[in-house]
Length: 252
Length: 291
Ligand code: SF4
Ligand code: SF4
Ligand code: SF4
Image 1 (cartoon, protein in one colour):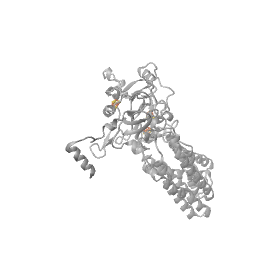
Image 2 (cartoon, chains in turn yellow, red):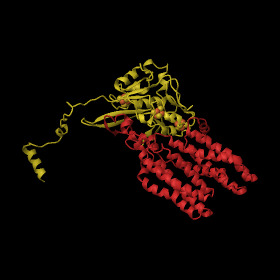
Image 3 (tube, chains in turn cyan, yellow):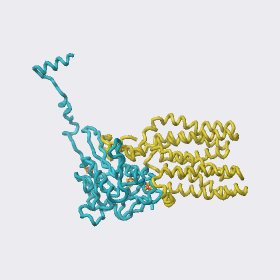
Image 4 (cartoon, chains in turn brown, cyan):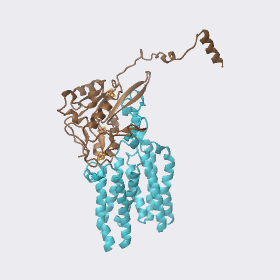
């Protein structure tokens, strides 16, 4: 059914720390690897060794620059994947029932055997979290590694999404965001975790932790030292042959 | 959004077909025998061709029957159900007129309502998408239903009614464009809310996540169309509405004039519908620093 459940018993999701993400794309690769080898149709690549390679990915890392007032600009690496929204517009638009949100844990999934590949769900998602696989003709999206987190064949330590398991910076956390006592909920409360595009009314489950304040240069209002000037090549005071050459070239 | 030819053809042609079927169902024209055969045939043909074209857009058309199941939540599913219901309920009315010179106006009336509801459902597929602010507005269903009614009137030989509907269409087209131009800013979504970093300062993309293209960029970030939006509007408005309206003012019931008006209208609607897609910006573009 593509009507959304009134509520879900749990709200499994990710908490992504924009303060510590180093933009290494390791989570992108581990996601691609796991989801190509396991659940559903593999994530295909096209023209992989040609001039215009492209492929299906469920997780992508952007890098943004934030120009701040009275502070140096800041680079923020920004992983983007399905937020497993409570009010998921991608689910309700699906004509076939292929898209659904699970009552037991809130994970949003696609039943690939029922998907007609109309693409409407990808249009409905504000976050670009769904990509149609060019080879399989079905919609692909993050499954929250549903085939890992409950998988008793894996060692306990691996029963979390591939991206979380792989992140070398500890920037990704997995847990039940419906339980206020869970570690992820505590983290969100402590660090002021936020929703992306709340105005879109999707009520995302995944939360993002904003970058901590940093790069404070002295007291408020203090001028940053002009570090750039130190990089200017200066020939002032050069003497001898080089000084003469410099002055001669200058006059030309 | 990517202006896919199959979607443009589908929405324009099936809209026209259901528009004609609505007029025939309402019984404004009451053809019988061969005349009824060609007229209903044209309506069914256009509506059917459009629906078929939309199937080419699918990755797995063989599973299409599943699309009739989720009408409780999905406008796309509702459209499929309504389209089929229109064609089915219209059948006794049409067969009666063709074979027994005896149309069944009760069926016709219900089918006419269903035909317009089908066009309405088509428009809601787009209008429901909050992620495409230009489309997320009541002017979209009004635009689609008016276009179907006006085009249908021309095909049904209703020049007088066509004139007024075409003029109304012209007004709504301009309104839709004017309102649409302000929708994205009005949506409140920008790079700041998309990343949640807006509170810190101005956000701009430094490095995209991939050097090549991908499904999202091809499907939802279409910049070419907007560059010529103004010119295309100036082409679409006269072709789709103003010129046919003038023709209907001159000779509302002269068949060659009606045919010419239909052809102009059709050409104009294709341009307008191309623009409808090409101009619409999806908020996902904010993550890529372009819209
Ligand atoms: S992020 Fe997109 S795909 Fe995922 S649940 Fe929300 S709307 Fe659906
Ligand atoms: S592409 Fe598949 S999952 Fe998405 S709306 Fe269409 S049928 Fe449903
Ligand atoms: S693996 Fe971790 S640090 Fe690397 S890009 Fe992903 S979230 Fe950021």
